[in-house]
Length: 66
View: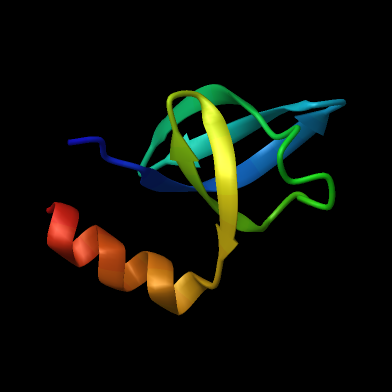
């Protein structure tokens, strides 16, 4: 079973974004989401942002993960 984690985009440099995961920043490939912008939340799996999500959805997901 695989798990995808929500994070917030902090910086964008081409197809690579710095994403914050509850205080931990990682570089993520955003090539699958050509319209991803700073401040948006994305679901990340295996180093790739695969979907944009609303902030209220992120809060609910984080409750389950904690």
